[in-house]
Image 1 (tube, rainbow, N blue to C red):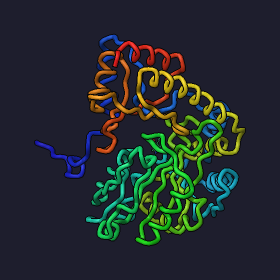
Image 2: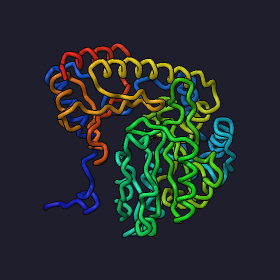
Image 3: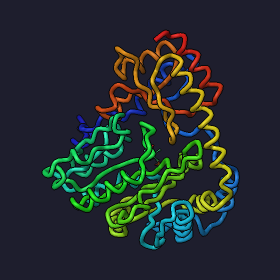
Image 4: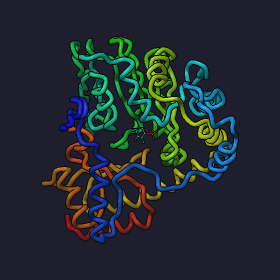
Length: 388
Ligand SMILES: *Cc1c(COP(=O)(O)O)cnc(C)c1O
């Protein structure tokens, strides 16, 4: 029998990180000492008190049954308190907070609630690949907003035509940004709110990196801007802040009606996040935040080593104010794919070609600061030997 995948799967670009995993495995099998700067997955362990809390919660039979669809009340209260303390944003835990099985899950399901066939989503390029895939799965189309260095890697909403805006249901934005490391300030978020108001577009701000920031910089929440809650929601994750990528816990906050739509999709697909993990999440949000400061210190130190090294070999990189990504322009004469291939073959360094995040990512590679400072020093030494 010849099995055919559905059109929606055939239309997907290859998932970038699967391909990188394959290449890395191939090199390792050949005995190469691979330095993996490819995938944005924290190498630091989850802080101890969070693990201890999970152990206790896992023992409690009350947590062995189906969780609530929209999330545990206690966890949602804890999210609302954290938002109040961190951003000064008021949230009603009952209607303005939704627990997610990681923020990727929520992002992937959102278009199913708001996109009909033929509708558009505005998707940045380069971007986290899920925005486009999720739009496609819902039968919609992505209209790409290129992010250029000269605009601080912010999309130019004035360039969106009236016709495009009329067909648009969703706008995806993500600051601090993966893959460029760029950050957005209040004036940009204000523009986003007025664009969304004018055109009746729902804003989805992916805010996974607000806590991974350096030099004392404190990224803001989109919801701090007046009117933001009328037009959109913000996705958050415990993955990067508390090194919990494997645990799968995130949340969406903001507009109650948008969250109700997402919640309705979810209640037909999953049955909520494990209560014991949500209880551990409460510990993360409410416990001593020294672990967050320590995480920031570690990545900042690695960033400084990598940026200084890349500058020494003549690559014009900006130190990111936030995220654990260094968005590095390729040397003259190289495409993104050619440069990543050379780093891999001649230096055993895995990086991600910018073009894999969208056409406008061509001319850059992304390096993730997910190995120790010593390994980054080793990567820099290997790059110096390449004579670019
Ligand atoms: C890591 C990351 C997330 C977080 O994903 P989880 O599903 O919460 O682990 C979301 N958005 C972007 C842009 C990311 O890089």
